[in-house]
Image (cartoon, rainbow, N blue to C red; front, side, top):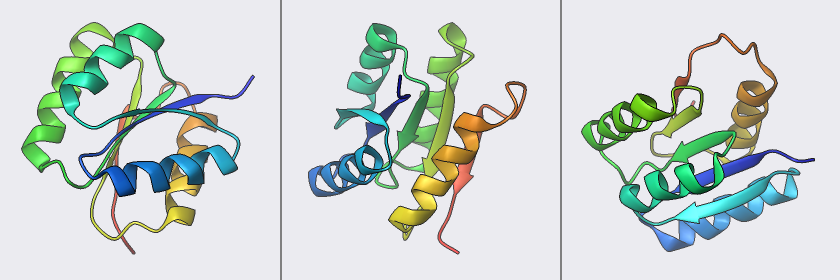
Amino acid sequence: MSQTVLLAFRDDMQLRSRSVTLKYAGYRTACANNLSRAIALSFDMTPNLIVLGDSFSDDEQAAFVDELHECQPGIWVLCLKSGVEPASLVEQCRSILTGEPASAKVRLLQAS
């Protein structure tokens, strides 16, 4: 069974593009266009990983992680910064989802 990645992006074009990229890489995806919806979906479906788009500020991303991990500390979160290429996203998702269970639950991915 494939793993589920919940994508949260304000930009619908980026949301669709990233979803297609991850589906092509073999992941199931769910999408939210705001952080409130992402929190609600995380409780409904318990995804393996949540990817936060770069349209959310550092403060918004941090507040989301704090709220999420109060109730669901086991879910990994990947916070994107601008300019992340699709291949880098797939590589980072794969690394997180096949990594050690005790590894950091929040990671940051920036353009190289």
